Image (cartoon, rainbow, N blue to C red; front, side, top):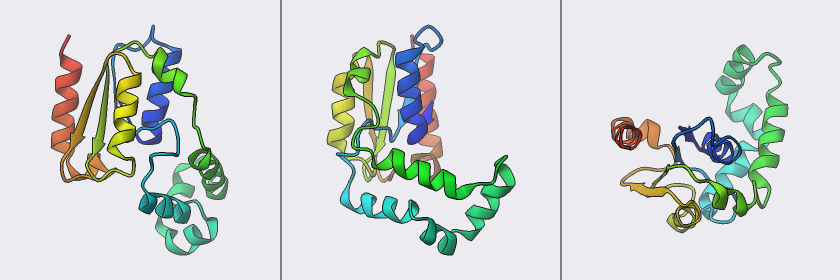
Length: 158
C-alpha cells in the first residue's frame, strides 16, 4: 500500500516484481505531471524551494535532521523537486504491464484530477477505482477509518 510518491513506487514495484506482490492499493499516485491541478502545482513549487522551506518549515527541517542519517534536507528537497517536476515520472507502458489486482484511490479534492485517476484505471488491467468524498490528497489524515476499511475490504477479497 502506498500514498502519493509511495503509491508511484508501489506501481513500479508491481510491474517489476509481480512475483513478490499479490495486490496493491495506492492513493494519490500518478505517472506524469499533467493532470495535477493548478493550485497544487503552485503549492508544490513552494515546497520545492529550499529558501521557502528554510523560512516556513523549521519544525520539519529539525525533524528531518533528527531522523535522516545524513540530515541533508536541502538535497532531499532538490531531488524531490526533480522528481515532482519531470513531465513523466515513468512511461505509461509500465501501467499497461501491471497485471495484479490494484486499487486506485483519490480524494475528490485531490491534487490529481479524477480524469488522471481514470486514465490509470483504464491502463491497469485488474484495477478498481475509488474517489473518496470530502477529501484532498491527504486521505489518510482526513478519513483514516474510511480508507482503512476500503483497503481491508480490497485486500481480503480473492
